[in-house]
Image 1 (cartoon, helix red, strand yellow):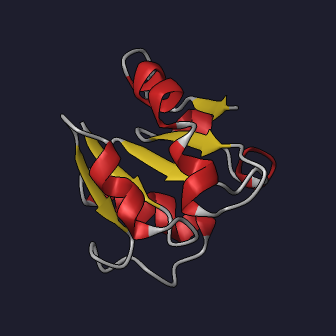
Image 2 (cartoon, helix red, strand yellow; image 1 turned 90 degrees about the horizontal axis):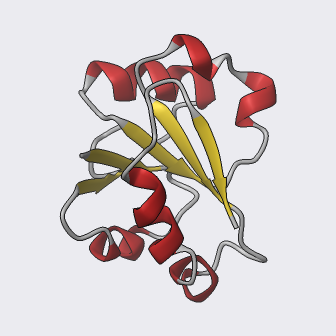
Length: 106
């Protein structure tokens, strides 16, 4: 599965998504794009899931009409140590996530 890490997430987290092609927004040259633009550009580049910590996306964007899904990591902070703890649950969620779906992982 092709995964895109939002630029607000430490790029080193991509190494923990074994078995998936995971790129950072910076590496994919999508850094600096706002939510709607980022979702459109990520879809155009063939990404299947946007991984973010931005819990406001569901209220700001109609993700249900998109081909990409959004996985929101809900950790106490955006620090790598806190986000790492959510990776096993995120990997399990990726097995069943559907296009247009928004899933929060706690």
